[in-house]
Image 1 (cartoon, rainbow, N blue to C red):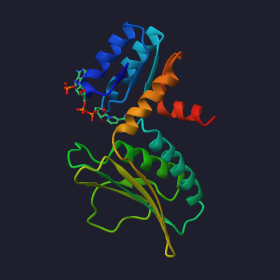
Image 2: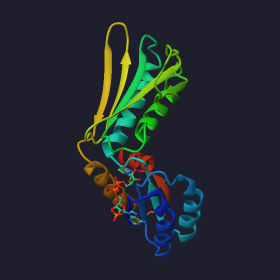
Image 3: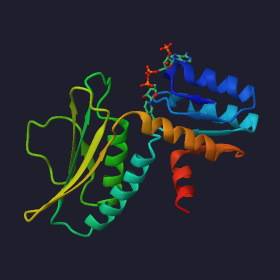
Image 4: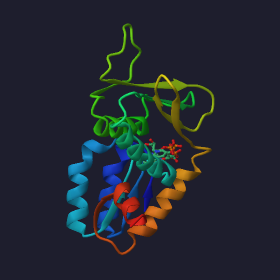
Length: 196
Ligand SMILES: NC(=O)c1ccc[n+]([C@@H]2O[C@H](COP(=O)([O-])OP(=O)(O)OC[C@H]3O[C@@H](n4cnc5c(N)ncnc54)[C@H](OP(=O)(O)O)[C@@H]3O)[C@@H](O)[C@H]2O)c1
């Protein structure tokens, strides 16, 4: 069973699917207050469960590319670090969950960046702050950019979603991976297995 619904429906859906002893993929976001209950339900049913705020295989590969770049840039202090994301004008939240994940990877791996600044600034940015901005316009399905800027040059890493098809494909691939498995997994487990 694959769930991309609304946060308020997720835990009830998990209960029903666990009662039917079926494995489940959850792509819905914003239900994470129900995580403890979800783990109990899946554990008691002895079924398999995987969730992620981003099932795009490309984005999950991008996370690893960003991590590798961040580890290199940790040793090259000449470069400042930044990020920005663009989404369609119907999106309810900003920054995107994907932007938060990317920013966490950068702060974790670049010791000179200590916290993320998502908001607009009415002052000079502090060197230890990572600025990650959001733009909302038109029909953009989702674009995330990470930049490293020195006096000499700029390096940019960019992921551009063309449509929501990539999320659906990744959810189906995760469902296939989950077949025959028991336990509570995230997309990271699936991707780690994929590259093993
Ligand atoms: N993890 C990822 O990769 C990923 C990617 C994209 C989106 N998402 C998340 O997935 C969720 C859905 O996004 P979306 O853009 O697909 O939204 P959407 O286009 O509004 O689709 C939601 C669907 O859920 C159905 N639904 C609503 N309440 C339900 C319930 N109680 N039980 C069963 N079905 C119900 C809706 O049916 P009706 O139209 O009949 O109400 C609709 O078909 C959001 O939380 C979003 O953040 C995650």
